[in-house]
Amino acid sequence: MTADAKAATDDWTAAGAYPVAPGVHRVTLPLPTDGLRAVNVYVVEDDGGLVLIDSGWALEQARTALTSALGALGAGLGDVRSLPGDTADSEAPDRWLTPHQEIGVRARTLTAIATPGHTRGHMVFRVPVVLAEKTTDIADLR
View: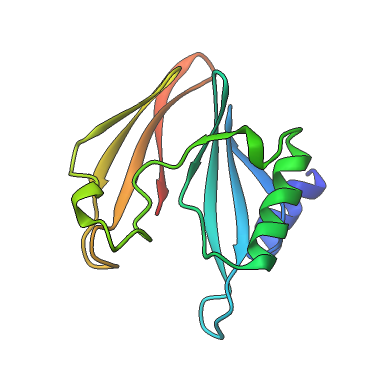
């Protein structure tokens, strides 16, 4: 078991970039609350840059953790090209995603799937990936 895999199983709040599927990485960013201590952000590699699904909270410690995790992937904040449907933008509800809306990110198509109950506009994304020459789906929670 690699150190990254061990950290991913021991403490899901541990800082770092963890592979989920080819070209998809989970990045843990800190939250300043006692109950929920971290949020999972997903980095999807795409032609010409990275797609960041969820962006965490606008906190200096989260920015530092994100910068470090992207660095571990050989990238930086300047490589992020898209942040589809960030629900933190509650001032602009007309820009929220709709169920089954497809978001083209060059080499991939993400499909928004409504998962009501957590927060207004809560979505998961269906991301097709190839595992062992078989296409399957992963969903990463927003």
